[in-house]
Length: 163
Ligand SMILES: Cc1cc2nc3c(=O)[nH]c(=O)nc-3n(C[C@H](O)[C@H](O)[C@H](O)COP(=O)(O)O)c2cc1C
Image 1: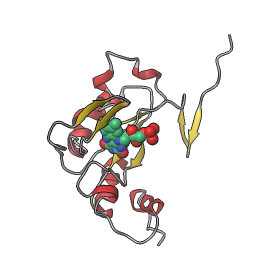
Image 2: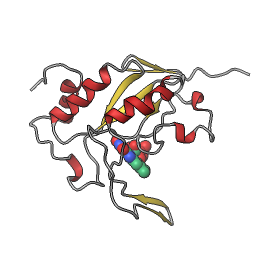
Image 3: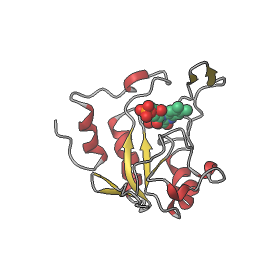
Image 4: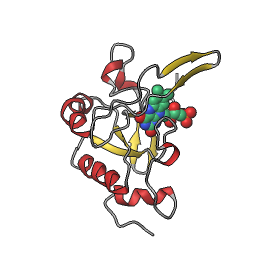
């Protein structure tokens, strides 16, 4: 039987296959190690990270509905320091590349988060969350800059914004 070649290249990041975990649905991966072989994933995107730990919304924050489920987690996360210290060492031992998802309230917070991750060899990519319907600041957090969202990539990549 021919095994299809599922490899994909996303901006220079090579994945064995295109199956990735949607941020926030897979914690920091270790929570799922008894359910699936984590090494079979194409990439692991972790829960959205902020500069400080965040508790998220008070419960109830997940309900089952007839057609699926509704959630309003509110971006609970351990914060960047605890992620780098406590979560990343486990992720670094896995085969799939780790992509860190980040969110902040200002462009500077995004840049700080990206800067912290840049020195973490095990993090191969950064996914920038620019909106979340489940937090008070809503669709666009409180970041207000002229221009289109892709420009936010510039401060995160350590380059001057193209504005
Ligand atoms: C429980 C839950 C938590 C989520 N947490 C985050 C998060 O922390 N950061 C983020 O960028 N997206 C988060 N999302 C959004 C998912 O990563 C994903 O974008 C969303 O489920 C839509 O996926 P789709 O575009 O494949 O339908 C969350 C989604 C769910 C259901």
